Image (cartoon, each protein chain N blue to C red):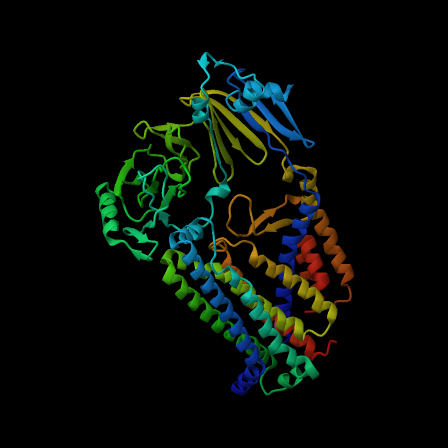
Length: 411
Length: 222
């Protein structure tokens, strides 16, 4: 019984160590973490420079790419397409911009804004998507009762009866096979909502890694195989329907490239952005009549690229900041905690063991605590237990130290 | 001998077990009626959409039920043992003490598994009459963290109740609560899919904790 008791005492110590390695760092950060303000970067069609705004000490400040402060009014006048409502209100909206007469409908249509975060991509997705009719009998898209999945065949479920619609499934299945689709689908990309101006359909990656564009048009299948450069292994395809209809979607590849699938017969337009890792960084695209601003947000920097409408690079801007981990609070944490465990991560929605090891700074505290536990437990007779205590605290630091204080069992 | 021990355990927990069964069935009935109402007043296709894209869990009411059942069973099984120190008798049976204690927790573990499996099968059968397999298949992994919490609370209950020293009882309870809170992070489908199997196996290891408390009990640490 004693032997088993030793085993279960060790499990208890281990368990307390794990719980502490989650909660102590968590409460440390809750107590001390300071908000880092992320700049918002725009490209001015007037000055042909980047202009930026961000919060400093609870106030919004505006500055240009040389860090010269500007007023909010200057900021608005220099981004007339973005702030046209404000300029109209101030009665300062020019009649022409860069020689182009101002047309509010056109401005609205050409203003693009969207972003994608790792969190939008990495979560468990049930692969069942509504087969939305792209040409409905009316002004609005209608939420369909047909849901499809692509396993070893194309299957359409009827959401009213929870049965497979065999006739329609066959129709789509045959169409995909005609285009050489290699079943099953590895990935599905698309926007399953009906609150949008039109329905682009879905992009499926088949078992050989080829991309197929599928849609339901007047109740009939539409399918098209998309040719991409050989080195493109698809990480994600972002589909967002905008009235502008400039591109079908944006491809993010596993080797960190970004490319648009244009409306010009699915021509691939590679964006002039190096090393974008969707698992780590946020992507943002803003656009107006003349320019595109693409920003990549990393943990401690933003890199913005201004391009023309053909996505030719005009200018880039980089701003860095000190993120929480590298701040003084983060450095002190490395002296206290040998590692920090969390089950959640801001980069995806999966619960997992996210463990972050500190650099060797923790060794000071760990050594002191290891000696401390030997002194506190000097009444223990067994050398093996003394050795266990010292080594355990040396490895697990403050977490193991507290665990051994709580569980005083002798073994 | 083990058979009589099993009978003794059953006598202790039969009412608690029936109450647990009734609570679980009551909640499942409520889930089912709620589902019927949702389909009646909206449409099934909207519900599919909600489940797939908005992470709506139609059985989320069931979330804390395994936890509650684990606690009820743990209390029903181990509180009688420390009243008048009855556990002493059990530890004096002509079976090895470790075996007796293990038998007790595994008996509870088996009963918990039976009731959890039963509830799972009912939920699956309700789900498969409304939803395609793709949705129904996510129930298992989504439920597993909640079930694991149920097992964990049961094992901890055995340790904490048999333990006789209050300071240690309280400190183990505190860490038990903190650990169990980790099973309720999110309500997304299959969010725990990457780690639930190792976590489940670790929680099974907690079944051995009763031995420490039993050993301390035997040594008369009060």
